[in-house]
Length: 142
Image 1 (cartoon, one colour):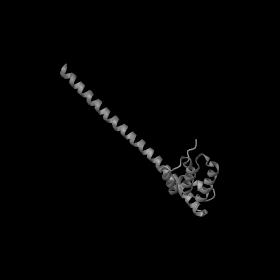
Image 2 (cartoon, rainbow, N blue to C red):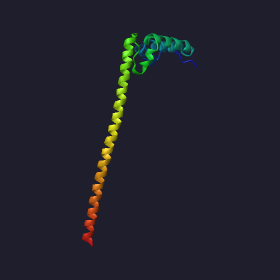
Image 3 (cartoon, one colour):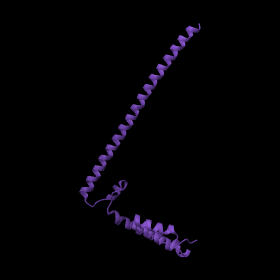
Image 4 (cartoon, rainbow, N blue to C red):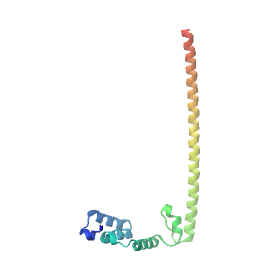
């Protein structure tokens, strides 16, 4: 079953929105959406995927360094010294983040222990007062 626009005869407003949005996000995406809506099931997916990967490589830069920044949304600049500096700075920041998280966990444990100690102290005081009131109440009834 073909669902392309060419077999249906006219464009749906969502098709237009998808193509425009694709071009606004990244031009190869818009081009792929346009081609899909025109050719539908006859769309040469493998060739388009290869072209998409090629365009992506050109857009993000060459080499393996862009993968090291993928989690941060950065690509390699092409200047090895700056890329090394950025990589080292990100590594130090990541170590600092881990250290802060560890301190945060230790502080949370400290606060939990303080709360437990306070709760125990309050409970012991409650039990002592209750025991005293029982002992005091027993002498009046006897």
